[in-house]
Length: 216
Image (cartoon, rainbow, N blue to C red):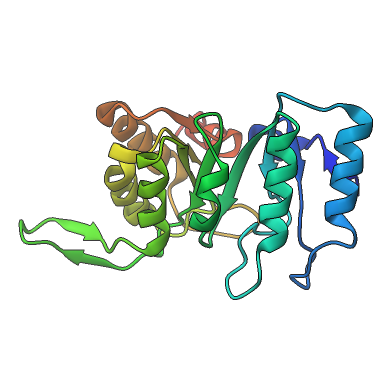
């Protein structure tokens, strides 16, 4: 696999370039830092938004993520911009990011819910969401990927809760697994909610296709 590459298919919806730092054993890919440096120097790649990561998490929980920090330094040092998507915690590297970069988290509707003092059902904010807010406060662009969607009703709650500190959300569905979820209904509700909240949103092609189907 090339160090920095152009994603294809559905992955293309996330960015023009991507880089995967870790392998399936959650170890840095062999010589990944040296190869990234060589690629940047030999190609002169600059001014591009590079997604971290597709086949791994840039912040795997419980592992040393120093390689991620070193990769970000190289990419920023060559004039490129970063788009992070994680289920982990990347706050340690916020000092390397600026208003041209994106920090994103994945939410799928599995968060715990409760009833607040006003009798409203809400999700319990986790550390991921807290770090997203911190990124926003530091001037870093923020985004959330709602895919896979495991509980549509909780996802709708999450959209409402992150709306005030997120710059963009992308909404998909559950792919490659059978489900009795009414994706057309979910997609329509999510779109109406985003429009009501004034949130910049993108419906992924797989969900949009379900929304465009005629009801039987």
